[in-house]
Image 1: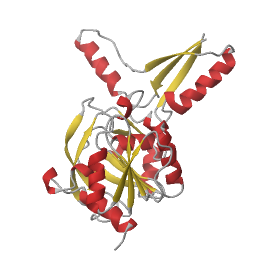
Image 2 (image 1 turned 135 degrees about the vertical axis):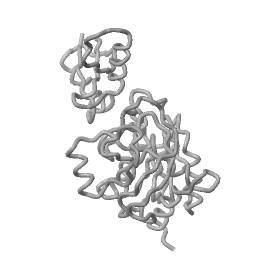
Image 3 (image 1 turned 60 degrees about the vertical axis):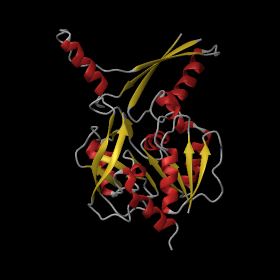
Image 4 (image 1 turned 135 degrees about the horizontal axis):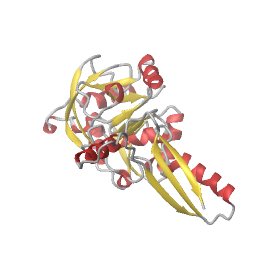
Amino acid sequence: MKAAVLVFPGSNCDRDLAVAFERAGAEVTMVWHKDSALPAGVDVVGIPGGFSFGDYLRCGAIAARSPITRAVIEHTHRGGYALGICNGFQVLTETGILPGALMRNAGLKFICKPVDLTVETTDTSFTAAYEKGARITIPVAHHDGNYVADPELVARLRDEDRIAFRYCDNPNGSTADIAGIVSQNRRVLGLMPHPERAAEPAHGGTDGAALFRSLIGVLAPV
Amino acid sequence: MKARVHVMLKDGVLDPQGAAVAHALGALGFAGVDNVRQGKVIDLELEDTDAASAEARVREMCDKLLANTVIERYDIEIG
């Protein structure tokens, strides 16, 4: 499996994400935001957490208009896989690849702590290695993780089984406790929690590792 | 030619920052403040000379970048 991890000015989880992909068995290339094409043969694009472009204007707004992001949009239109974590989720909603928006946490505070999530569906390439309904612990670290969706969108996400993860104890005011969603073709996942920060024992938890294992299982089956 | 863009959260989208400002005003003794909404103002200097085409261009800028029309609305002043 070939993974590309995007690097924007202000990305700060790019190397952690690359390590998580590598530990799961992927071949990883880092890609600078000014590049206009992804490396040939990339299966999955990782859009990392951080504060791309200083969160100027809106979180993820400038990154969503970067040259490399146009290539990512084309990649997803061709049926390519993408994983956006935290700021990466914000970039995916800003491009319109994923619906809804992420705004300031309801409590206004930056939240940095492990949170409990439920795995709402295992019918995605990112969650296949989990048990449906499993309760997992993954850290969050964000100021703007309050997922906003109108009732029609929430109903559509629910009916199409596109809510991947929900918060057990909603930390940020997200609509319907939504922590992560997938695209209609189920090949793009955006989530606020950081699975790459809970991927090996030294992190204090390994509940995120199954996400990367799931991807490898689908894209590079042994 | 100058343009000023006002970007506000759409009605119905909860504004946590506005709510915090309202709370702080109450704490300072300002009574009777029912609703506070916080937005942003973006000033642009344009080389355009025609107001109508300038407004059309700024509208396109708003739709493509300056506002996230999923949760925000905008108003444009030209002049």
